[in-house]
Image 1 (cartoon, rainbow, N blue to C red):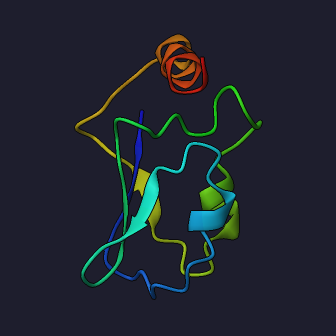
Image 2 (image 1 turned 135 degrees about the horizontal axis):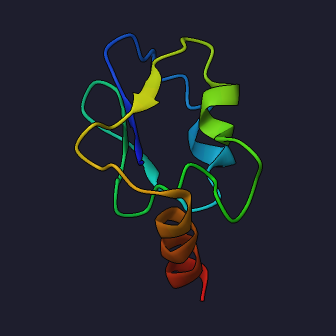
Length: 81
């Protein structure tokens, strides 16, 4: 499942540079994760790097994009094919 950033984001920019898919961008008030690019780092890392880097602990699963690990890996391979 893709991740999303919720209120509490301080726009510190810690998450953006660690995303292997370049799925994180600056929004109007907080950073935004593109669910079409987010693979929870499946294919690149063992766990989501943005969650590890976030000092505000404001990155959660996006309930609108439920995907299996296999689907996330397929998405990663399509992005980096």
